[in-house]
Length: 88
Image 1: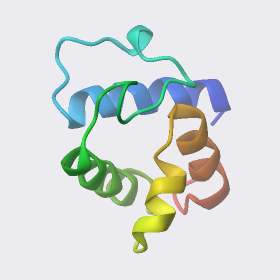
Image 2: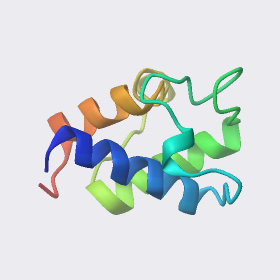
Image 3: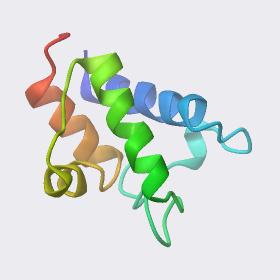
Image 4: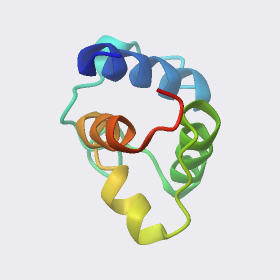
């Protein structure tokens, strides 16, 4: 899958999985922080995103420090999936 296609898919999955019904994929910038002042996600959302990575891409994140490195923005998530996905 091409990187841009993966990013769009990720945005759609995040909106659906986290029930962010007031957003569209176009509302989420690739380099916008997912947490804090960016998209405004919280620690519960981070757990949901880890479940999404496991279910959709076969990626397990067991160390919270790894999660903080991966769940920065759409770009870092797409890069990590591209490098680590077992469902290519």
